[in-house]
Length: 257
Image 1 (cartoon, rainbow, N blue to C red):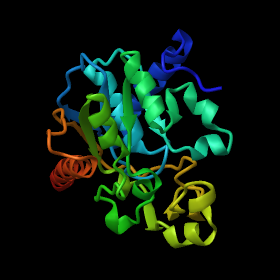
Image 2: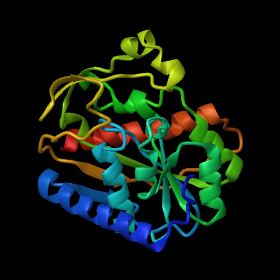
Image 3: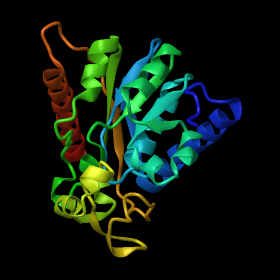
């Protein structure tokens, strides 16, 4: 049974320890810097980020959580993750760190308790991009986060991180293979990455779900000002406006680094 979004003290301490250790690792190994709107939110907030490469082991996940820690966020943040982790039985492991299967109900539960939520709308399609698209933010037409913001009235705060796509070489996102195997139907998995990494070498599918040794490239994170839908915006328009602002920031960070 999923853990409630108000975690036990021990689970929160475990998560805080992981986040602090992640921030230290990112700084020492990747020269990570975090900047922008580093003010803790006073109301439930939907943080929207994007993938560099991978799923729950994506460095962008750790960079986003470390940035929230540096902001002084003292309320739990529910990480809305791909449901595959629960389909293969490892979801409960990540629940202790604040993850829940991505759904409007999980986010609403967090907001109802005064907590926050973090989502990466592009999911596996964004997470398993080929190397040529490593500096593109791909939501793949997914607008659920925007509809959630419209329906609940919570603000959206984008978090953008550059560099993680260069920690591994992704030859292909394998979308054709996922379709051929029917994984898009049975597991909601639209991509199976084909990668070259340390220590796995050439691999199909494993890297992205399992950790790898990332190359020591520089990572930079920027927390952007809050965004809210205008009165005449539907979910499609708001989602695209958020994505466009995030893409412009990622392009700027990439050029700076």
